[in-house]
Length: 280
Image (cartoon, rainbow, N blue to C red; front, side):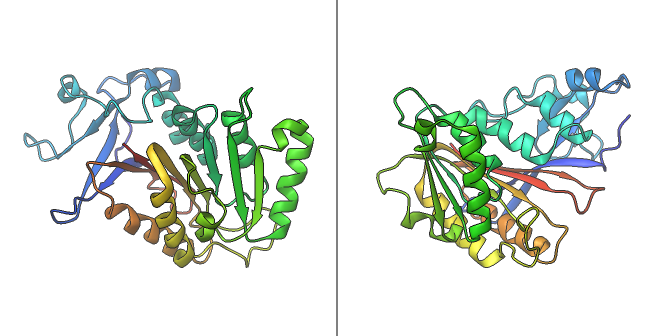
């Protein structure tokens, strides 16, 4: 049987009318688990709740048969196999983020790539929102001109002229996103890839202070049914502090209105951490 100490899927929640609290969602394999990944993905069960009162530990599969695995309005429905693939190293953190986006984003939506980097997230977003009516838009931001140049080059290679017009590039800090996104825009997704530019200057990184401001801005402009998606890299100086800032932001979100979760490998302390804030 897999050890529960290897990984967890955490749901950080807070109610403004009560003290802060944290609830953890453990992925618990059934007692008779086959050794193959395919069987693991089929049999994996989810649980969100308090420790089992019978044994003081978290429930096993037999305790879950009468429990609902996730809220009906959750963007994670149908992603069990993908989550298992991430846990076993078959998918990257960004792959999981893109799969969650597909559960939320619709054609014609407005979305924001708050840290466009080399443009791969920007391109993935454009493929989700572009439609025949040219209503969907991607607002891509970065403080580094090199990142915008790399993103622009990727888009020129990958898109036709009509699709390219749907992407708006801005050399601006992610905390200033409200300065460039139209006030009447209904934003469905705001995505962050925190850290430094891959292949760029590692001394230039996102900072906890501006990221906190950016999250507050994203919260203000996000529509109901929208998603804030974050991949946090903690292996560089400042990365751990930025993770703490993101988690602190999550604890202030009302549980009645938000689903907040992170997917973290506990025995990979420097691995990237996908985090999602879904507005009900």
